[in-house]
Amino acid sequence: MPATGTASASHLSSVITATSDAVSHNPSNAQVVFRASAQAHDAVASTVTLGKYRVEVDEPPALGGDNAAANPVEYYLASLLSCQVVTYRFWADKLGIRVDDISARAEGDLDVRGFFGFDESVRAGFGEVRVVVTLTGPESRERYLELQEAVDAHCPVLDLTRNQTPVQTVVETLTSEN
Image 1 (cartoon, rainbow, N blue to C red):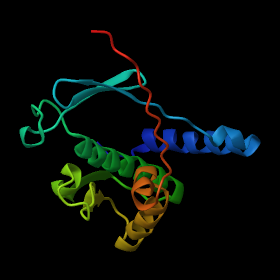
Image 2 (cartoon, one colour):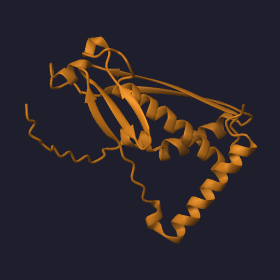
Image 3 (tube, rainbow, N blue to C red):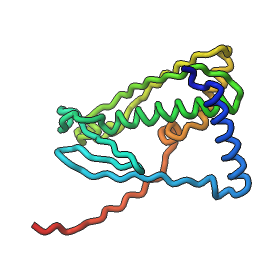
Image 4 (tube, helix red, strand yellow):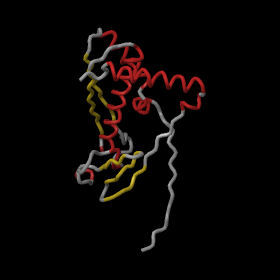
């Protein structure tokens, strides 16, 4: 089934138009807040609540977990890929570029010495992430490269990776009674 068939392309066009109209009438309509919460359980696992959804997060045994769910950096890769797919669909519609199918894969290199604090000169996160997006459709390679340029400039999760994002962390402490 095509990723941007007539019905889905029409839907995306209406979403883009409605959003553009709403933002042009009131720029505050462009501001969106996303929320998540997590509750630790077991050795290193957690349940993360994302609105009405819940996802489990764990680590492989080598990192202290039971491998009962994807780990945080795998969820990052999933977030990046799913955001890429969405952004490709939106920008294909916006630029009038036909895409019949989209698939993507990613891999990242992580040196655990940074996470464990064995070597403070080693970054705790990925040293490099490689993404491959496969587009199927009738357009020329040049048109698909134009689409990639637009996606690279507008994908929110890619932007989080490429640009420093301020993060403020507050630690609240509660006294537990034993």
